[in-house]
Length: 124
Image 1 (tube, rainbow, N blue to C red):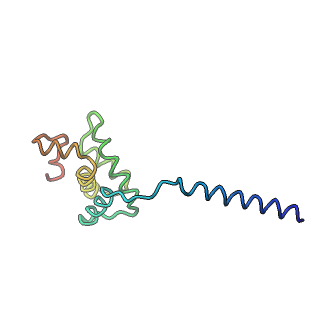
Image 2 (image 1 turned 90 degrees about the vertical axis):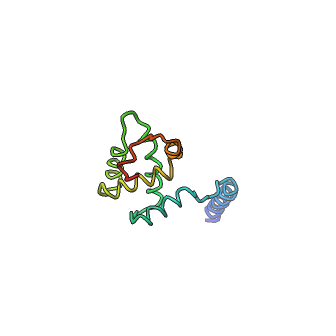
Image 3 (image 1 turned 60 degrees about the horizontal axis):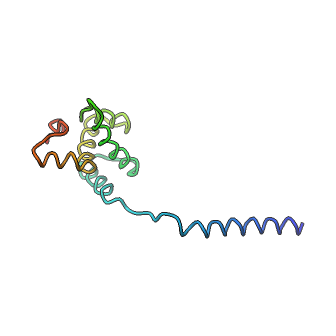
């Protein structure tokens, strides 16, 4: 019985040691300011989200959607509606807010008088 206890104690010490070594190398958790601002803008617009992390990930996926050939903001909004299980109205608002939060190139183009996506769909 003493031998079994010694083996268990060694395994526990090994596990604690491995954890103690790994902790200093773990990446620190950092807040994402653009993600936080995006969630705030959704809340202010009345677009509720169940999981903020999922909403930020979906919002960040809008820019790559728009960069695909032939893709329009309406198509992206439809994909957002399907992915988030929301109606097209809130999905359109979500998509517009995602563009303003996560697509700096699109916003810069607007500042230069160019329209990279049909923002008329969003009321801009």
